[in-house]
Length: 192
Image (cartoon, rainbow, N blue to C red):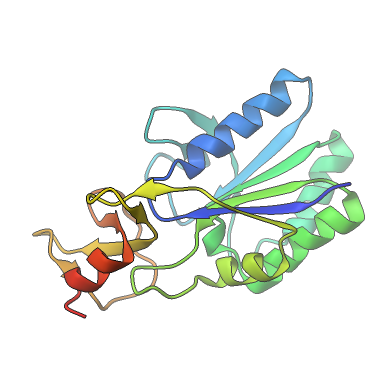
């Protein structure tokens, strides 16, 4: 029975690495997975999912206007798809998360979503909010704070490495802009 999974974490927990490993596992068994990633994150090239440890794969792009059910239904009609893998799923809209539930329920294809739970202000992303609500399985991928505790928060930094507490929810960046920390160090960094 197909299910929808949400693999979530703070930055640098290996979400993309885990996604790429899952894709490899399907391929190794002669199955045909398909990968999607957010069009707005093109740090590693357009239509690419890349991990910090050097793994990379081509991916289809989703944009705010992409109807994921129709896109996947079309791909599946051309060639049987055994699994849908979504990177940067925090950027999905409510409607797109619903479309992915339809992929599971109507096309009977498992959907594995990988992304951040919260932004640099500790607020849920829209995609994450509905994945937390509608996914069949929730899996936390863990990373650590500099103190050794589990990092479950993300700090956005300015060009001098200082924590900032305002700005747009989405600002694409990696280790140059974001630091994963535990809740205590998050509060301390923001003076709370």
